[in-house]
Structure formats: structure tokens, C-alpha cells
Amino acid sequence: MTIPKQTKRSSTLLILMVLIIIVSSPLLSPAETGEKMSLKKAIEAGIHQDDRYKNQLIDQSIAKVNSQKAEMKKYFNLDFNGSYLFKSEKMEINFFPGKIIEAGTMHNYDMKVALAQPIYTGNIISNSIKLEMEKENLETYKTKLLEIELASRIKASYFTFRLLEKKRASLNLLLENLKLHSKRVKDLFTEDLVRKSDVLETEIKISETEMNIEDLDRMMTEEKINFKKLSTIDIETVDPGYTESTEALETSLNYYKEHHPVFRTANNNIRQLQLKKKIVAGAYLPQVSTFAELHYGKPGLDLFKNKWGIYFQGGLGVNLKLWDWNQKKKDNSVIDHSIEKITNQQNEWITETRKTLSQLYARMDSIQKQLILLDQLIATASEDTKLKEELYKESQVSNVDYLSSVLTQERYQSMRDERLVEYGMVQITINSLIGRIGE
Image 1 (cartoon, rainbow, N blue to C red):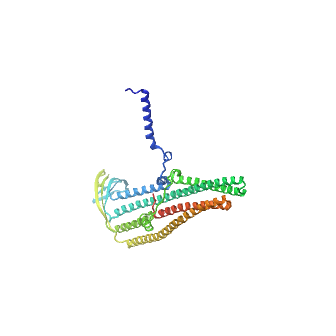
Image 2 (cartoon, rainbow, N blue to C red):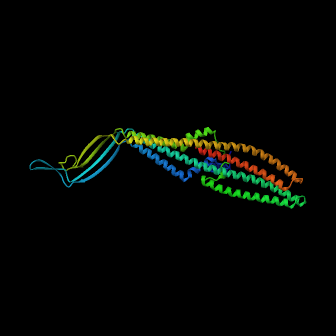
Image 3 (tube, rainbow, N blue to C red):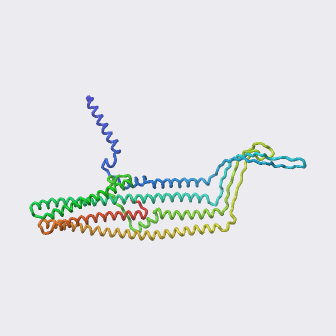
């Protein structure tokens, strides 16, 4: 069976179109595909674009290089040195009366390649390497601390926007109900069943609600700009379903002591001081090193010949402190006092953190209880609004009473939304306090 050329050409074009769609579809942005970006991705983007974070990464790289430099101190050094020396007088040797021989030259040259290798330093070099490694770790703690700060700011902006979003949705629902009520009131007014004041009261509430919505739109726009500045991401593209999570108080306190960058920095400072104490002790042990030098100079070793010569020399050097007015004890005393100060500060941090965490967890418990009460109030207010609506239709309550019940229901709903966001904010504060980013 022969396939027509036109059909072949159409099939080929169809296949190419399908392939183009398949290949290009991964290149679509989340906004274009309808997918929402996780808050975690937004936080990562915000952290990595921050200039302070970039500078901190540079400091971390510098600390790593310093650590590598310290590692090289245990290996030999190879140096070149060249010198020229002019002497106005030459050495004279009087062998016997009347016979004087001059030695050396007025112009002296020397070039050497020198190799020096430490043999024993009382562990000064090894402890110095560890000290630089601790300094490198210190920079990683600073980086982590900055990450926590930036993540907390982005989350706070995210929760603030979500609160404004919920408030606007609540007010939009209220506005919709008020407009429906306004239509009914106007219909009743045309039939002379209600007073003109009922229409005006309803219109006033509608205008007030529209003004509140306009204020919320302005605040939402400002918060969008703030979130974009912090994370480089449009908040509309971020998943709105993120929730913060926390653990029990004691678990959070233990996490703080084990993971918080500030607390780990204090431990790091203690380790650095302990290493400095070992370095001080090592300085009072024999310092042994060896050296080897290859010289090429004029006159060289033979002062009686004015010519260039090559010679080699090497040796062993030993240095030992014998007495320095008990400086070791004084240095160690200063270090011990510094360690004691840091330990006392850590204990103070733990006490303050426990107190703050206790207050925050108490606040969370209070919010949870308030949410239960607000759910009950919202349900009751909803029933009251429906009842007032029926009573108003029967002219048993005034329009003001009905509008008051509608506004009360919205107010309770708004309070519930605020408490939910406040609960999330408290969780963010807890995680920031103990050094946990969250996602």
C-alpha cells in the first residue's frame, strides 16, 4: 500500500510539533504551568541573592584558605637569597716579619638556596592547624546564623501577606453579603416597607467595607514588594499552604544547645582558647629544626682565592625557653578566666532561652484555646445573623441590629485569621530562637 506524499508530510509535521511540546514543556515557569513554588525554594533564592550572605561566603572561603596555609607549616620551606657586601679593608695575616698575606676581597657576593624543616615544635604547629580549622568552623556558624535571620524575615513577610489575603477574602465576602442586603432593602424601600435610613445605613457600611478592602490591597501590594525584595520571587507563585512546625519545649531547648550558631560559636571559642593553652605549653618545650643551604659565592669559603665557589652547609637548631618570669602561668590564667566567662555566658543564655521559650509556648497554648472559642463565636454569630435577617424581614429588629450582627460575624472571622497567623509567627520566632530554619 502506497502512502500519499501529503499524508506523509502531515504526519512528520505532527510528530515534530509533539516533540517540540515535550522538549519545551520543562522550560515553562511555575507560573506558566500553574504549579506553585515551595516556600523553601523562595527562601533559598532569597538567601543566595543577599549581599551580606555573599560576603559571609567570602569570609568562609578566606578562613578555609587560612586553614590550608596553616597545614603547610609542617612542611619544609625552600628560599633563595642573594647578597652583595662591600668591605673597605681586607683581612691581613702576618705569617712572619715582613711577610703579610691579604685574605678576602673588597667585593663579596653570595647566593644561596636554603631549605628549613621543623622537626619538633612541642605540637605548636599541629595545634595551630586545629586552631585555624576552628576559625573556619566559626565562619560556617556565622553563615548559618545569617541564613536563619534571612529565612525568618522571608517567612514573616509570607505570613503577613497571607494574613492580609485572608482578611481581604473575609471582607470581600462581607461586601458581597452587604450588597445583597442592600438590594433587598432598596426593593423593600420602593414598596414603602422600610425607611430611607435603612438604605443609607447599608450604603455607608458598603462604602466603609470598600475602603477597608482598598487599604488591604495597598498593604498587600507593599508586602508583595517586600517579599520580592527579600526572595526575588513573586509571592503569588509561592504555595499558600505552608505551615510552620515546632516540637516540645525541652526538645527545642536541647536543639538550641546543640545546633544554634551562637551557642556553637561559644563552644568554638572555648576550643580555640584550649588550643591556645596547648600552644602556650608547646612554646616551653624544645623547638627543634634542621636546615640545609647550597651556596655559590665569591670568594666562597677560601678567602685566599678571589674566585667563585660552590659549597654546602647544614645543621640542626634547638631552642628552649629557660626563664621568662613565669609568663606561662600568667597566660594560662588569662585563658582560664576567658573560658570561665564564656561558660557563664552560656549558662545565662540557656536560662534566658528557657524563659523565652516557656513564654512562647504559653502563648501558643493561649492561641489554641482562643481559636476554639472563636470557632464557637463564629458559629453562634452565624446563627445570630441568620436569625436577625429573618427578624428584619418581619420588621422585628432594626436594620442597624442586622448590620451589627453581620459585622460581628466578620470581626470574629477576622480575629480567627489573625490568631492563626499569629500562631505561625510564634512558631517562626521559636525556630529562629533555637536556630532551626524550618523547611
